[in-house]
Every structure is written in C-alpha cells, then in structure tokens.
Length: 181
Image: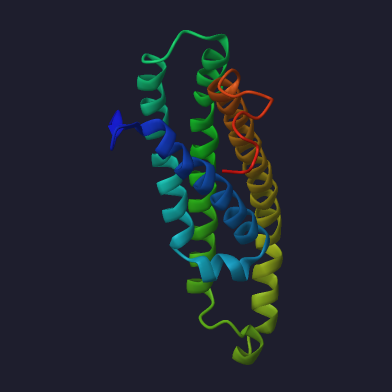
C-alpha cells in the first residue's frame, strides 16, 4: 500500500501506531498489575496487541515507500532508522499480552467463580495465589518495562518524523493580513 486517496499511506497509518501501541501498553500494564482488569479485558488484550503489532510493519513498509519518494535527507534517514526498531517492542507487547491473558484465563478455569471465600476453599485459593505471586510479579515488571520501552520508542520515532516532515516547511513569522482570515 503506497497511496490512499492521493496521500502517502504512511501519514495515515502512522496514526494507528501512535494510538494502538500506547493503548496496548496501558492495557497490558493494567492487566498485568491488576488481575481483575485482565479478566475483564479477556481476549481483547491480545487481540488489541495483535492489531498493534500488525500495524507496525504496514506503517514501516509504507514509510519506506515514502522515503523513496522524498528528497534524501539526514532527518528522514534518522526517522527511518528509529522506525525500524519498533517491531521488537510491539512483538514484546503482544507476547506479554498473550501471557497475561492466558494466565488470567487459566486462573479463572482453575477456580470457578470469582468469590473464592464463598466456595469454602479459602485456604486452597490463598495457597494458589501465593504460589502464583512470583510469576505475576515477574510478568508485571516485564510488562511495565516493555510498555515503557514501546511508548518511549513511539515518542522518539514520532518526534524524529515530525522534525523530518516540518523542519523547513513553515515560517516562524506569520504571513497574510493578520486579521485571522
């Protein structure tokens, strides 16, 4: 995909990445830290992460097409280099989202019902939660690290793209009549 309605596809697709990667990161951290959020999000969490993951190579490919159709510029090259680094972060978000979803799904299947105290298996449920705690902590820390890395990378890529697109495309002083029209 190179053009959409006469516009370079990259300038449209980039909005998917800019919205979906941080949204996925936020949902992942919430689900990893708060098991109830993981249960509520359910399969939506890995599905969102999959769409975010798929949007990255589509946007990158459209960006490479655009790079071949603009003047050679150091800022564009820098943006391209940074853009190539987002895919591993998006893959990490997807893998961790799948792990969080799978563990939340498994926890729900292992102990039917959400109110464990009313089932009479309070001791068993508490022991199961305590055994799972180290795994949850590791997944939460990994989720936080990958989410932060992905969001920072999206910011850096977007900032470099904005600089590449706008560095000489506007005047610091206003033109026109000055009456706002």
